[in-house]
Image 1 (cartoon, one colour):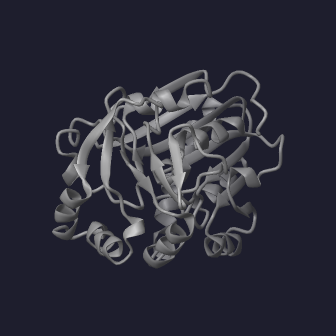
Image 2: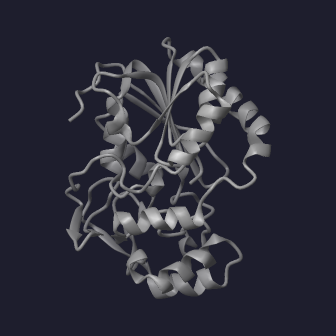
Length: 297
């Protein structure tokens, strides 16, 4: 996961109206972005397997993992006819996904990237800090804490949230001036709000992204902003060749948003949503909340 191992369960325990649970495998019966029931098959598991097995990236390994454990797999990727979001029709059992992330993800060679990542995050946070007056920062899926430390150096009181306990331990050792928590958004104390919430390359991993984004919106303070990045399935460079797109890599990526899908998922959570232009197939979203936050369930 790009920002950290903020895993596929998201943050809410109850199923979305677009989900149906059967023997711990979640079957998606509607669009996880906009909620529409108007979906069609984009490609089947068999079609994806042919492409994945011929690839030279992680898709080949993931295809082998699915062959060894079919419950990690899917029957088809579906596309929403209303918002063009692309998504897997099944979400594997949480225990299997946890084992999958342990087997295929980690932080090899990450330490030598830290100076460059700190510089990148400081530039990004420097630009964003002028959009909010408060100085409380949260990074969802913080990995080993580069964005959290960059925020601290930019004048924020910074918190990192991450599911991977080993990553949190590494972050706390390397950047002791910050607060790092193991868990989901539900780990945060009720009534705790942030002026800048960052969630980079996380939402594509969760089973119920609309619920996840609702929980994200609930911790943004009045006048605060959220930065969300995720692959863009509606980008002109990939929308006619989704089967070959390297970001289609289940079970790691379960939902690949379009611009319309992201706007629909954020509707009601924020007062203003900007989606920045991008020559690459990635969504860069800045969302602002002016009103008082809703109480979290």
